[in-house]
Amino acid sequence: MTAHRLGRRSFLAAVGVAGLAGCAGQPPPPQPAPRRVPGQPGVVTPARPKTALAAFDVTARDRNGLAETLRACGSPVPDATVTVAVGASLFDGRFGLERPRRLTPMPSFRNDVLDPEWCHGDLLVQVSADSQEAIDAALARRIPGAAPRWQLTGFHPDGESRNLFGFREGAGNPDTADARAMDQYVWVQPGDDEPAWCTGGTYQAVRLIRLAMPIWDAEPVPVQERVFGRHRDSGAPLGQADEHAKPDFAGDPQGRVIALDAHIRRAAGSEEHRILRRGHSYRLSDEDVGQIFVCYQRDLEKGFATIQRRLAGEALEKYTLPFGGGYFFVLPGSTATAGDYPGRAMLAT
Image (cartoon, rainbow, N blue to C red; front, side, top):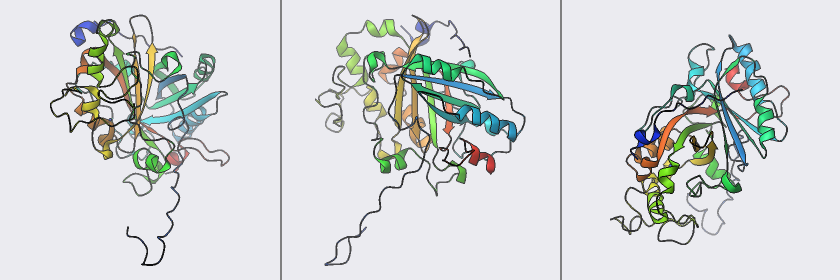
């Protein structure tokens, strides 16, 4: 599978240089253990050094053909984790599928210069591994009934979760080891306003973002820290010592410590808007470098879209150019039942 090359548009011109207790005398009733909604691996599991995203257009003509495509996409790969998601375009009537209620094509946001060749897709296959060889082997698989649309491979610089701008990724994420938090923020639940087959899935937003490294590297570290609102070395919010400390926005209304247009200030919001963020760097050439931003949530509008609108006008815009990606729905995990695969429940409705 061959990745498309980015257009050679001028990036510099484009950028301009998120009960009551029991009766008296009796102990309160025991709390039930958090119920785990099964999801596919690759969402809450720990990040691996290499991650590739491959989008496809489905060419299968009927549900049987689509089932074969999904089986191939979700088949196990040695030394790799595979996660399968579907895009809004798969629900255009070809297969008579019931669409996840909140799945739409990704819109264009402020500062976006979206290239259609790098956007959307009927299917999105994410492959994570410890080596490029395992990634290449997974991507070399034949996927019947599907045509490649776009593909990009990411990595973690220096073996840790820092982006190419030198700042840590994922600070403020909900705890992936906390099943209750994952049920609250990530996995679609029974009783949500969704088709029954969606339970255990999650909405995925993908953003492909080119970074203006020459401009960024020319900035002194204090300017870079002001843009993010964090210390570069420790990852802590400005004015704090611990990476996981909460920024004191209320005590700094004028933005003297953390600027009013700093990334973490603009991204901050209420608990209902929390998302699980994953970041991967990419490098296509010396000029084409950037970030693959991925996030997961129960509701795209409450999650990514709300945060993205709050970020409009942030200081970071000067150094970034979003050019691709899309909205997807990660299918519920398959079970141990013989013949099961991601998407089987969707096709059974």
